[in-house]
Structures are given as structure tokens and as C-alpha cells.
Image (cartoon, rainbow, N blue to C red):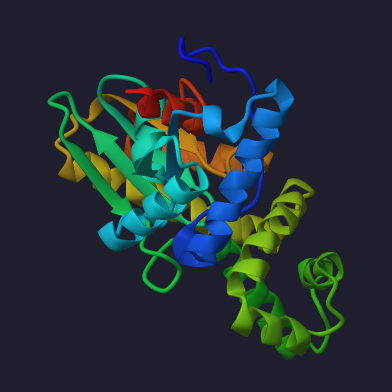
Length: 282
């Protein structure tokens, strides 16, 4: 983004949640994304004067400071500002009262009422929560497929697709990998479940129905605690599971309407990356 706020280039790289992948790996991915954008417009790193990073996993002050220091070392002339992914999603939703549902590898919701007060829930990681997230959906799908294998002596259609598309020949092989690196397995199962649900697979649809209900509960909790009225609430959905599966999108909207019947469901006004860049300029 130039000094006037005009977007010059944007790019993508890998996971940057330092709590999940570590500070060094998160920093490398941010550097990679930044370098791709800077190469596109032929800007040198030392020309960057501000960097905003909206990162999952930075809710803890010590981890936030570690990421700030690491990025400051990578971009020595830039003023570095770290935001949580929820903070930057809320900024990307625009002004006024709103509830943002983040449904990606993890899950969380954050809301801002008319007085500017903010309330959040979820985002505790897979050990304590993340209900309805890609991680949760993937782990439930794997558990269900393994149970069906034990009960019937053969894999279900969904189970076969999971093994085949992840490249494993047995559940024991997948289990060993998942025990060591669960983040490399379970979120990757979500697209398989999503495709199966859109194709009419009943098991996949049941798993996604449960996830939609859990995500709607996060939104309802924020509405209750932040003092939102029950009328004219704007709900904004974002995250890697949104827009990936027609069945899931429809069921999530229905679940949200059940808990907040008069809510409007909308989109972010800008990308979280753009919101982070704009926030960094100030």
C-alpha cells in the first residue's frame, strides 16, 4: 500500500499463527508474502515504513511481543504493529455494531456494540475449543470414519476419500502422523468433507450440520454478553471454511438465523490484510 492508501499489490503464503507453527516459521511466511508483493511493484524492503500483521495466536502478550520483535528484525525500517486475527477482522467489518464470526482452522467470534465495547469468545485452540472449525470438522470426520471401519469391517465412502486424498494407505498410518502433527492432518480433511457434503454424502452433511450449530452458538454468546439488541444485528462471516461448500454455507446461515432471527448476514467491507495495512499506517 502506498502512502495515500492505494493498494499496489497483494499476495499469499503459508500459515502464520505463531502459537501453532512457531515464531520463526510465522515470520518466514510473512516475509515470503511481503517479498512477493514488493517484487511485483519493485519496492525494496528498506523502503517499507509500516507493517501491520493480523495474526491468530497473538492474544497472549508475550507471543505478540515475540512476533513484533521478530518482524522488526526482518523489516528494520518499519514500524511494526501486531493485531490478533479477531481484532483485524473486526476492523475489516467497518464501523458500527457488528458481530464477526471467524471460521477457519480455529473458530471464534468477536462483537462490537453501539458504545464501542468489544466482547469475544472462542479462539482457545483445539485442546480447549475451536468447535465448528476446520480442525474440529476434520477430527470428527476421521473419528467417525475409523469407528465405521471398526463396526462394519470396511471403510465408508467418506473414509475412503479421506485416506485416498490425504495419501495414506491405512488409518494407523494417518493416526501416527496426526499424533505428531495434528495441524497438518485435520484441517486438510475439511475440503474433503465439504466436497462430499455438496455431493450428498449423509455422514459429511451430519458433521457439517453439527459444526454450523456450534459456530452459531459462538455468535449467540457474543450477542448475549456484549449487550446487542436482538434486532438489526449485522453478522459477518470470514475464515477458510466460508465460501468453500454450498451446503455448509447454507446450513450456517440457517443456524445463525435460528439463534438471531432478525440478524442480517453480510461480508467484510475489506480483506483483513487491507485492514491490517490501513491500521499500520496510523
